[in-house]
Image (tube, rainbow, N blue to C red):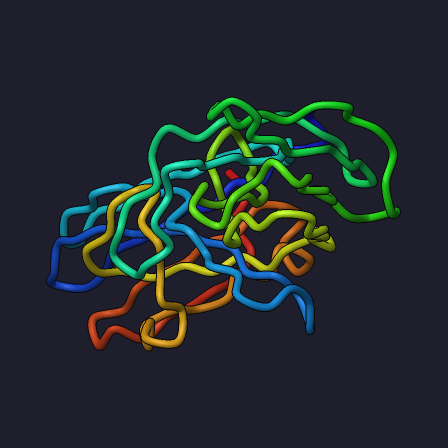
Length: 204
């Protein structure tokens, strides 16, 4: 379900090699106890650049084995593609967790209705994009989790692993990427002093 494509050029003008990480956060006051996930990552040498590109194809994520502690890595997720304005049921009957009954939901959102078979020990549920999880919350029985879209994009540089649970408050080096200012194509430059220069990408 592709709507359009965002691109981001990352320029590492610093003297340090590391991992560039893109992650997302919910806008405004929404669900409590949500966790941003290291969504897209790439290893980058000093004074080099890398390009990211992704389609805005949203989906529901089930992660029955996830431990939502900062630094832990979420693996073995299920991903159910869905348009904004969709709702789904999440069940864990017989020890197997799955989504079912994809249907219309509140406009501009993705909603997960967890039934009574879900246990507090069955990991996490949430949303994702381009087949990777972006934001997760603990799975709980008889709880409805609604995620209002769109989400905000952020970039950070350091040492990260794709799928890692982030403690966003501790990411002092993060910078927001506002695609409304760049026509879906942005550039993020990490300067030598570890400040950021964020601007629309230059057309070539």
